[in-house]
Length: 490
Picture 1 (tube, rainbow, N blue to C red):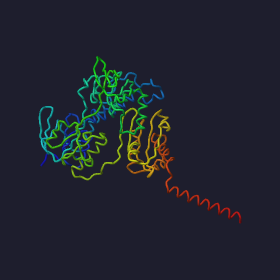
Picture 2: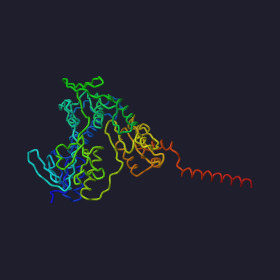
Picture 3: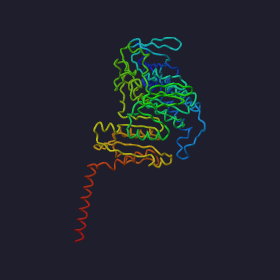
Picture 4: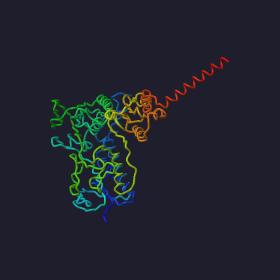
């Protein structure tokens, strides 16, 4: 007999969802985490901290009210690093408390330490105190997440040259900031600190950024962040990073030079798998330390070992990781469950927010799908005027053949909340008619769906069934007129 039915390594979104699901199935389950507080990267250095920081920045800076009261408007005149951390620590403490309560309520065992495989069904857990424990399990879930990528040519010092995990513990808010890497993390932090009126330079070696987002949205987003003060340098590979007193000097291959008080290096993350001793079970990782799985059930090449969350790569979202963990646990414990939805929302918590669901215009063109576009600007809605929104848009893509919704892209205030309407319509195979027929609360930003729907509807071909009815009505009118004329002659 094994010690556990399921052993989960890592307590992030995937690990916690799998463990709680196994607990609800009344199976014996253990969660192992190398840190003394559970929650993983998502709770301590990733999703929850960065989104809490964003909300704190927007509230204290008065950013949302500046269109009414001017760019100099502030809720608090002097915002310090401790102001940002106060709300952050309160939120994290609450998240950890909730998670520990969920584990206790569902009879999930926990253990702090670093786990490594000794064999196919055996692991060793080493604690910080130097003790080791050997445990056996029928099934395993690897949900160790990722760690920051720290190249040797970047002089990290934890003070003014930081990675994204260290950035949350900064001692002071800099007057100028260089962010290297225009991925999701880099874009989020660059735009947040720009809202604090920090002079931000965002450097991306490639000629484009966030390539998985619809290009129209990126164009609108780029215009907004530049207007907010972000100096965006695309196609600028870094040649050298040096400390020079209180400043950081960045030399680019194109000959340009950037100076700032602080540098955030956010160019990628690596799968946190190096300590697992995967060779002992015959598993391999790619060059980024990620594990390959069957995307239907999250089994690895070893059938009783599963992997979920950021450690398996794209989409690397806390939301999808939770679903992956649940599905993996059910499959491992031979319990039928509903499959994952084919359409999930992608959210980027930048300033302004970006969120998408479904296909982009570029994907439709690649697949040769005939489509129509509907667009609504937030300033066209009454709610937008009330909130003082000068920017923001919703773009809707619809099939000309079936009239079905194919994708929605939103940039602007509340994008990550609004996108769920699109997700529901996509998964229920709804058409443009839904947005035209239905009433939306007024005034709301959600009304943008109706505006975009009508924008597309008015340019789309009339369906054959409507044409037939119109022809019938015309025939009825002609018959009525003829009858009236005949009666008039009598």
